Image 1: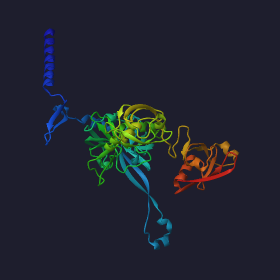
Image 2: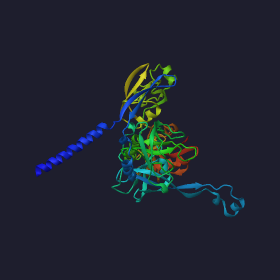
Image 3: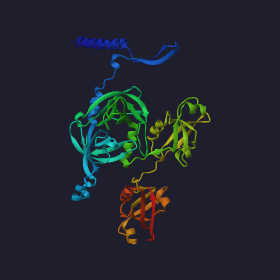
Image 4: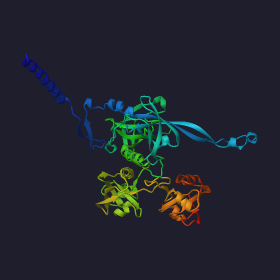
Length: 484
């Protein structure tokens, strides 16, 4: 009896395996192939194509259902100044000028965000949370949390916010460098506000390394993923996801004459986002590596002038003295063709690649000089710090100087109630104006200061110039000024 049962079972298994093998054998595999045809002039033209089985067409259900749980709706509150104009003079006579002064009013805005860590860290766009006095996050399951800003990076338009929660759903991070033109992607976010929360649209990768029109910033990292997935205001900060459900970009902007989607959307590549996010979480600011060159894209004219074999790479217009490129031996008119083996096609690809390094990291750069290809190892340097940036040692950057609150003993010895010490000086306006390490800043533009952030704030308010007063180590008064 048992032997008969085993015989039947083995027969069923064998039949199933045979049927599967037959189906696979008769089903066409997706094989890349070349097709040769002729154009209208009779010239042979070769192009690549692929033979796809019906089952090879993309199914987005898994990616969509998984990723949507980690995309959140972000609502922000900001305070804006409202200027009243054309005030009736009789009204002003009876009620005073204070009624004609700019008034603060509350305004609401919204965007999207992506949960990247289960303990509440969410990546979004800097422009979504810029100036926000209150941030509220709504998950796909309708849970709501108040959020705080961990750090922002205007150059890449990336920001990190955090909610007090654990065990949140996340999206695995992919590799945006491996994206291919024509590859399917999903855009997930909240276009046009809360009414269309958790909307999913699909499109393809239209281009890589795009520079976005009218984008500006102190550091411009312009290497966006362009897609035709429908994105509208409110999608900012949302997820761009591949077929596997991996995060490959953060949706940032659209190009439109009307303010609504018209076929073009842009996302920050996740490989750039990862670097920015790690620094914002660990340090509160981005430790950005720089190469120290100005560059231009190689076109046919440049290729002919430099006798290059192909129109690719970027040529160096200028090398900053003392920069990483200068120390490595790169020169003006060298043509960079690869960084750590990755082909360089334009300035955007250089920016995107360098953005993935920390100061102190090294990379192999392949370049062409006098028609010959050579390699050099570059050790990246740190970008100049921005005013108000707080370093790991607690000092604050201010026009090339490092500041910290003066310690009580120093203040007592100088008979001061408060002040800010100049810890050290690098190149910049403070050193040029005559500042000295160890000096104590007491006033900035006639306002008393006791903390570095007050120095930065007073300087920021100044319309044209910054005027500094204080005492040196020996108690002698000093003063100097410089233009902004």
